[in-house]
Amino acid sequence: MPEPILEIREVSKTYVGRRGLFGKGAPVEALKGVSLSVARGESFGLVGESGSGKTTLTRSILRLEHPSSGRILFKGEDMAQLGPKALRDLRARIQIVFQDPYASLNPRMTIEQIVTEPMLIHRNIVGLDHRGRRDRAAELMSMVGLGPQYLRRNPHEFSGGQRQRIGIARALASGPELLLLDEPTSALDVSVQAQVLNLLIDLQDRLGLTYFFISHDLAVVRYLCSRVALIHRGELIEEGATDRIFDAPESDYAKMLISAAPEVKVPERA
Image (cartoon, rainbow, N blue to C red; front, side, top):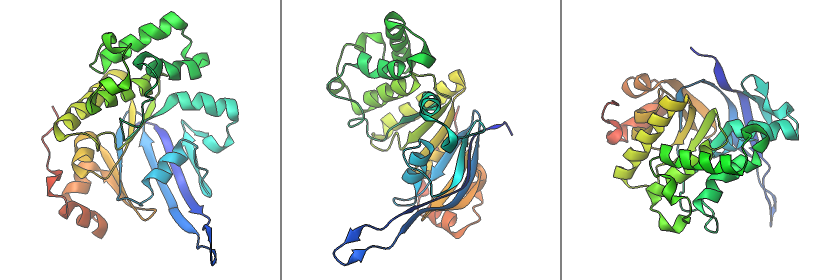
């Protein structure tokens, strides 16, 4: 197995209960000792229902949440030990594609401004001047199947699938090694979902990206991911090769999920 790019070691997160009319509420355990490892260049899927802990884990990887205990390592470095500059530089290497393509793009910005913004934020790493950033934005737009002729337009001029392609171009702008894909196709029509998934497969082959795919959609995960982990109420229930999980699930939870989703049978990838 290739070396891990992301390691999550015994990560727990407890939220303090909110104070209400009758005193403080009970603490909420969002994550309970979660451990997993993602190899460089693989597509890893994290599957769980709403409230399972997927979002908390994703935010913890991005350092938008601080685990109550445990460690998260990126390329062997403990992210909790990084100073502000090192953490900012690290975020150039870990980017996210959001679920809602309508809410994730600033309507007041042109597509060129949206795609070049990460290059400006991480200009010490990207190292491009104004002309270079424009050229790179044009290249990225072509890479996601839209083309540079759309750079002067605004988000409202695009469909949901096109907006998600723009979101992917933006996520690639800083040259990341790891992409967190937070339900990136759930807001799209089925036909458009397939196009975006095939684009992600193509980009991974071309750029050597690592994907951490967060979803509740078993069919999408089976199509894109080589390994999968199931999370339920903050606990990792089962983890393994995708085909093994779907064809011979071991846990009752995995069996329940798969039996409740007959649509998991998907065409073979080319």
